[in-house]
Length: 278
Length: 315
Image 1 (spheres, rainbow over the protein chains, first blue to last red):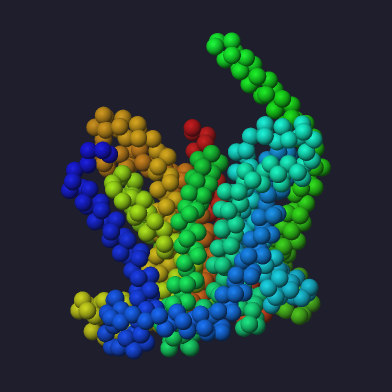
Image 2: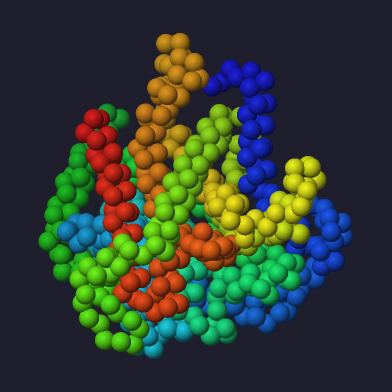
């Protein structure tokens, strides 16, 4: 489509901008609310852009105990589950690429199935089991769940990356007498750094954004994750706290946006090539 | 010169033979593979596979938290069949899933086609479009709650500024408006997702096809129906079935927007299952709802696999 007329080009830009207005307006509105002084939010006819800018809501979120603590919980759970899932995925992906066996099909099948089942089915027995071993209402239990939760996608990404590493590199090391563990950690790990970065980001964000497991498992207010805490603020008490809630929402969204911008290729190529090649 | 090339070729061939040998060598070491995979297999079995199977089983019991479990066959399903709340939830689940999936995929396709026209600023536009998708479900709910807020929300302010409404509408508690309101909030973040996936699919279509189409005198409309759509079909099928499954399992955004209200009007199946299981403690009954959801999702998956297989047989 090289010889498009100027008119149709303008029309295309115009249509895209219409989409963008719909897609960005709610965010713009909330960012604006987070910067408006409270009186301005509740004045009969607020304007879209703030007339007066204040960072009070942000400082009240950062200094406020509850949201800050829940953010800290999310960081802890996210960090530990990310480290664990990456450490688990590397040797597993290696094993799946270098040894072909029926186990591979079982694991790939599970990766697919795990995307479909409603979490409620897994959640009920998991809840019963975790309660039995005393891991409900505990950050350790939640970390464990998030490891299993993000494992399929991370493993799938890692599998793709390991597959692209030529076998020759390993052979040279094996001839020099390296063991399998040495091969994985000294040859593979450095080459996999981009994949490790991408999957670590993914694992962190999927636990950062997760809501359902955290809602069911974390009952004490001091252990709530950020998403659960924010959802709680939308109840009756949220009505009077538009400004701080807006500020907290903006803070909670930023890590996720950064990830998506870096990773959009990863999300799409897998699905598209999967659909084309099966 | 020629000799060097020849030598390189033989080295290359030799390497290939070595590689092949190694592969067969490796494949005999299944024990080594199991060793490496053991942690993952254990973790998945204990925390994913076993709970899943147990969850399916619990759907055939009358289990309540703390009580002993007893198998009750299809009793839960008979009860579900006669439970008007379940039917209501199920109906709204279907309405929600079909409308959101249809709007999301068609609006997403429109956007992807616009972005695929090789105009300026496309990568800048793409980054902006990505942002709603990146927004966590709970935050999406909060954003739209603030948009729909009767007195301070943007929707009422814009509508009354435009002179379209005289009194503020309480979008999320009104029986009349709540369903369209949650659908708009629901498709908001999902349009981006569909558009980005479909754009990646569109970019795999070779330009030669369009050039050939043009030579044959195909207009834009013909190009869309005869080139774009057929080539895009597998990707489109993947997206339709995946988004269908995701939408059917929606929980977080509705939880924040309405908690299923008003009067259970937006109580999607996942919310119904959550309430039965974790609010009232009817674990067996909640698992039964989960099983019914699995059956519906399996039908979707089956249809998707059939489309994929047919495509592959044709090509």
